[in-house]
Length: 538
Image (cartoon, rainbow, N blue to C red; front, top):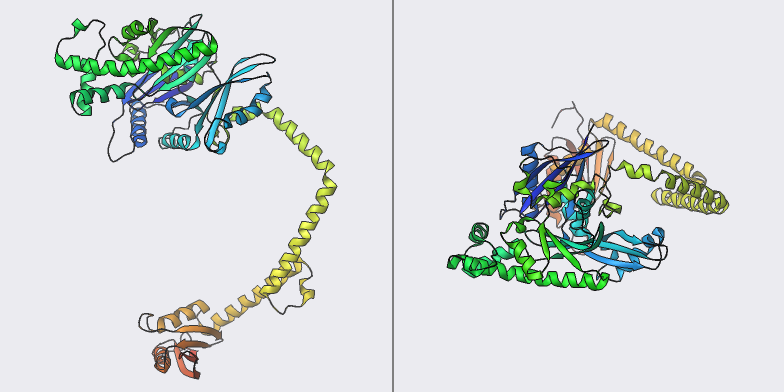
């Protein structure tokens, strides 16, 4: 039966979902959906995105076997590291210590993953990424709220390599794939089918809308409309018709020129590091829909620029794909992660965030588990004698602690009755049975349980805001109750006595040992009989 894999690109402007169906011998890109996020002042941005995802899935009745989601590239830090060895084991041991020197906070607060870019016997180049746990928890919680338990949490930009390995024919030299989104542009630089560099530049569609709103002094919604309807980047100024269009284009150019400045720095850094010039650019993302932006970037950078069109891939089988061709790549790249796209093996679902339903990992680690079990048995046999005496001492100490606790709970108990833990427990059970028997006898005699009697005593006394009394001792013996108390004055003794005389559950109320204390308080003792069930009232 074919497996359905979905890639969810949860952007700040719209949510995109690509569906890939995988069979035993092939796979096919069969569905794509996009829905704009509607923000509400009463909800957080994450809640608005979650509602959009839920609505899209409900409307199209989406179901899947594997879900892949992308972590926002602007919240990811990446490092290209070089190690003077080729051992994968050593890389795994060294990566955390290497990353720790770069981050300004506790290493326990980040999630780290990496992929080996190139490797020889004496040299390894590794792309390491790390994100803050709080950001990852927030994202996973958002998807959990719509019942999406993603097996893969990829890093935006990194998995563009899945498109290269499974769909497009890459150039021989270095090239850049730029996903121009709403809040950021993600730049992925590749060499052939290998990842070279990733970076997020926080200048994109939203920055353009903000610039238009500021330039024309219009609300944000109006600026967004002007960008969509009038936005363009003409190479010849004579093509500009009116003043409003001119202002819109000037605002767009200001943001795009600032973005290209950062892009030049990125390309220059890659060239200096890798000694390989970037020879071409592939554009995708919602902002790449801006008319003329490909020609403008090509003219400014003096570089070949074209669009990344996934609708031309041999495995694409969707209708009306051209309407979404600019925004398909990121969602499709995520879905192809579940097809084993051959890109960098980076997945933020590690350690405490690991995908709980992934039994494949368990199967792949059977040999490791066997080795660990064997090692445990071997160490247990070697250290058995030492561990035996250690545990014996601990057990003896626990026995002594139990006996001491029981002695404190039951003072006056003979030591011979506490010779061991079992003896102490037997004594406790015996005392418990005695108390239970006494309670049963009391119930039988009075028709009331001790708790019922205490509740009746509490009900008989006036409210605490009108009458203050401190009960220091109370005893219930057969059908008689006695207790000692403290009140403010002698009048309080009479008040307590009268209260019980008025109760239908008590009779023969008497006081005794009435005396005045050091601080003026009055101490007294009061006793009364309990009226049994069926005995009749006063």
